[in-house]
Length: 418
View 1 (cartoon, rainbow, N blue to C red):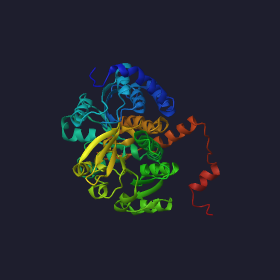
View 2: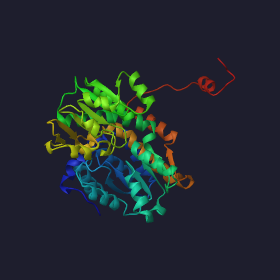
View 3: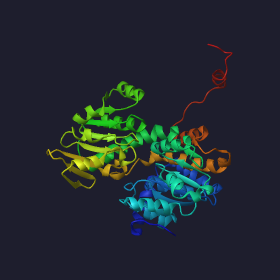
View 4: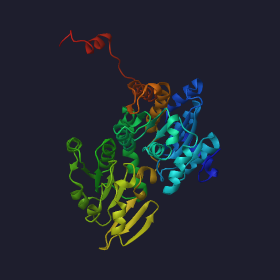
């Protein structure tokens, strides 16, 4: 089997961690049990570019149980858990191409390896796999039935491709499922980002000024958790509706040019480029800590910061110090990459249970319906979204009400009036 991981000897440790995560993923477990019986993905070739974590391992195992041949590479050079990658190779026979800390050339080489079996389905987290297919591997496009996309940044890219008429196969935007973005983005990103920042720095958040750039679902989650830790939270935004919502939620809202002067911690969650730039670094306080949890490290203008600095050094495992000519030191976490994965372990498995349940069921849906779909980005079918919510509630022991016949009739009629 073709693969490229750091060390196969890490497999036993990885297997234990995968088992631990799976205990909090009851929805995906139910899907895996059904897949193993029905084999709805029999003979299907899937290429996945995702964060190689314990939760992703549970998804890969589910897809294989359904009959698929899976090839997996990392969607971020710093997000790979090397023991998990080794376990998937050794214990599950899944071809993995991922090493934590891999350089850019290796990162893209791994994407090419993941595509080497001519996939029929792609699974992406950031659209790098799709982009590579559409640029470097166009000869493989004819065999692709469809794909899924996990994250906001990727969905934005794919919708741009669809709008320009260059997207060559249909994609389901898993990120847009309510059982994904309302929970994974808000509660998962919120907790894991704060976890990554604290692990990297061991600094106290209480009493500090914490600047959150972007008030989408991820930004909401980080702001909520930072405030819960006792920080004074500032939001920067470009969307007036989101900015207004942040004000109504009790946060200060101001431009980054102002926030840069007073922040102790900064975290970008926008999916855009150069959100924190030279003019912001120029006015930051000595000791300011800068992180990104949006997707790619381009949210921070690290080239500008490097050009400004007279010296750089790594002071902790995930903390790089940039010393400026005036003596101020600014600290960047995890090379500006996703801090919750670079310096911590990513989202808790109970949240990823819903996200990856969406992935598994959307692959099944795509296999059944790909021939009737156009080359554009689709939302997750409502029936899948609601079924995952139902299964999650059942797993949590939560029972909800059902409409009576009279209530059902009232909601679907106009004759009854008030």
